Image (tube, rainbow, N blue to C red):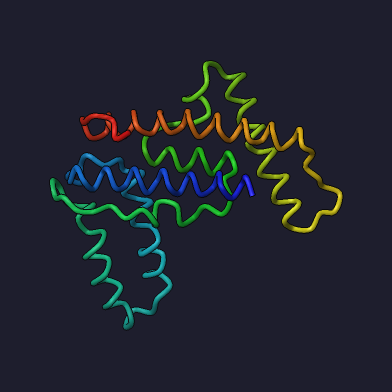
Length: 181
């Protein structure tokens, strides 16, 4: 259950970030290329899978939701869903990928004091996500002890609190604004 709450935190942080960005009505040029590319990826991938003669509605939808991202100085609304549509599980590699959207190169390094601590935190997150996945997929040999659960909770809290502050700083820097939270 902790992993589900941890994953939901990532989605909620994304929704809050997008909500703040939309309140600021930034022009497209203020948004990172990584964000714009990830935002446009799902509709473009779907467009590619559609036969040519059936693309009219998808092109119309893309023009409504994403075209502004590719024009200079045009404001619009960012959608939260496309930014995390690809994430299946909050493993460290996925977390690094997500935070890069907001120009945080490596979230684990950004929220720790040194490479050793970043590596340790990354292993801890990987450990509790892997444990959850093994249990959820019926691996009868996997069990989480009380001590494990307390350790996982500490890791999740540590990551969430620190990444929350880092994301707020990154968004403020991108938009040239105050921190959103």
